[in-house]
Amino acid sequence: MRKWTAELREADARADAEAEALFEVRPPLGTPPEVYWMAVEAVCQGWIAYGPAIAVHVSEG
Image (cartoon, rainbow, N blue to C red; front, side, top):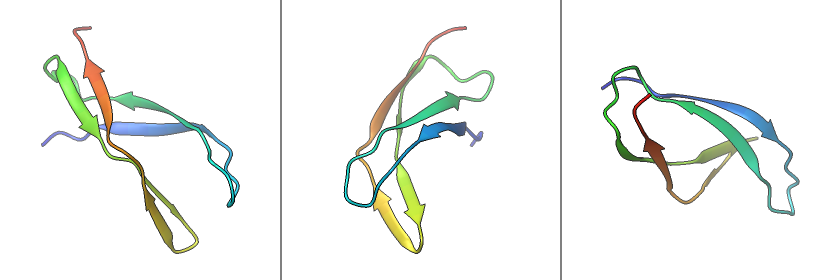
């Protein structure tokens, strides 16, 4: 399986509030056009939180 990369662009989170995080996702070269799914996992100070699955639409270049 080829590795996808995702880079966190911006995040500002408080412990008692919702937060928004912006990511830039890069599929490997040659990835066929399709809808893929990404799972979000946030880790901080020993706690892990999982977000909902997010659809990632890949189109030809």
